[in-house]
Image (cartoon, rainbow, N blue to C red; front, side):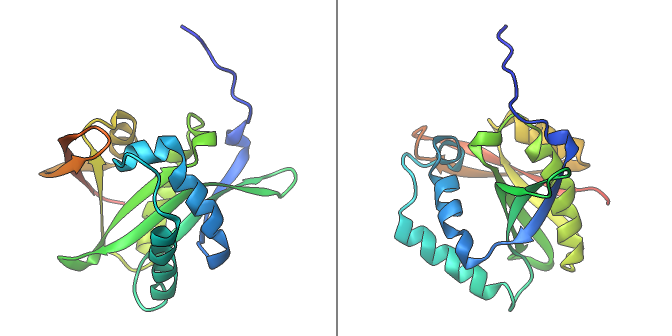
Amino acid sequence: MKVTKKTHNFDENLLILNNAELEDFDYIFKLKSAQNNTYWSGYKSPPSRNILESWFVEKILKRKAQLGGLFIAYLKTINSGNSIRVGLVNIYSRESNQLACEFGYEVDSRFVGNRIGSRMIPLIIDKAFELGYEDVYCWVREDNIISKKIVLKNNFQQTGILNRKYIENLNKIIHMIEFRLLNR
C-alpha cells in the first residue's frame, strides 16, 4: 500500500467559515470546475461560468433577505495568521419547513485527505443554529462512502428517505440518502 506524505499539518490550524462575497467568485468557479468536484456533482463537465456566476450572485444578494447562504471555509494558520480557502458550504432552508435547513459542502481538491470535510461539519451545524434553524439535514450520494462516514460520525442519522437522481457522468440513476442531525 502506497502512503502519500501530506504537505500540510492542518491539525495545527483553525478552520473557520466566513460569508462568501462577490470577490470570491473566481475561487468558487475554480472549485466547482475541479475534476473531483465535477465528478461528485454528477455532471460530465464543469459548470458554465455565466450560469454559475448568476447563481452565485443571486445567492449573495438573497443572503440578507433569508436564512442561510454561501460560506467559504478558510484554514487560518495559527503561527502566521494567514488564511487559505479550502472549501465551500451552502446552507439553505428546506422547502417544506423554513425552520429546518439542508446543507451541501465541497472540499477544495488540493486539500482532500486532510480531514477538512470532517472539520467542516461541526462548523456547519453551529452556523445553522446561529442562523436560527432548529433542524439540520443533508443529502449524500449512496456511493459517497467518505461523506456518509463523516455525517454519521457527527451525529446524523439516515431518515430512511431516498431520492432518485440521474447522475450524468455515470449515466445512471443513483439514490441520494437523507440524513438528519439527531441532536446538537
